[in-house]
Image 1 (cartoon, one colour):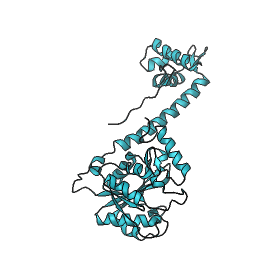
Image 2 (cartoon, rainbow, N blue to C red):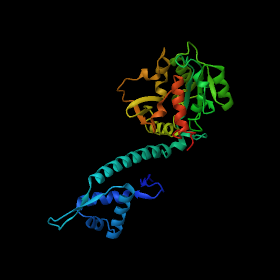
Image 3 (cartoon, one colour):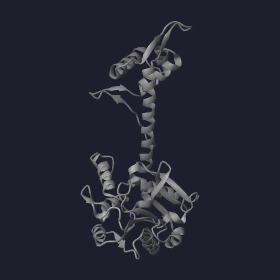
Image 4 (cartoon, rainbow, N blue to C red):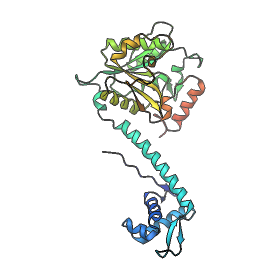
Length: 326
């Protein structure tokens, strides 16, 4: 099974004026030197091919072919410069649509996800949990950003909703407000010790993961509310095939969070101190690190300022993220 996408340009009434058929005709006109020869090569009646070209020209408002007089073949036709530009734009757009579809398909239909995320996991399956890091100073935001409203619910509650159902979860919480949100959702929470630096939250989560016998843990920042469940599922799938590797979400080669660590690195993570994340236990070119491409760039956005909160709100309102208008 695989995804299939067909792209069309339509007019103001929604009628198709350009798509895969006319695009292939233009390619073959260029190759064979005439509309008639192009139609024959496609097994299409000449009258139908001519109608497709005329309809596209009418909808687009410019000629797509021009007559070529004389020559060894007695004349023919060739695509106009406008047609060449249109075809190049159409091919770029189609390629982008197919790439986005492939990424979304891989996330939605990732093999083995059901087994790894179902609440009643098989005894032989790896036990993988999620730790949401919800303790910190929020110095740049100026308030407890995790309980700030984002489309009607606190930021951290939206982040918790990014986690696929059935996965064991814990929140490293630094405030009673976050504790209350966890209690409402029936989610375990632990209180980090120390100055509530980044490493304090991580160590508290790792200690909990060890106590529960987790064989891997996905660390999700509490202020990253636009992560797609499909991206986390893909990370789990990659980890299942590579149980000794770290897996992290990224965008166009830029690694970011969330990050999945196997239990073999839990002890090293417990030794991290200061305002440092778990990546400090890995080298820049560590072969144990595998990357999963996010479906959208905003999945990697965190919220450090009120402006960044507003930016996340705009993405949701536009219908581009979970819980939007689409």
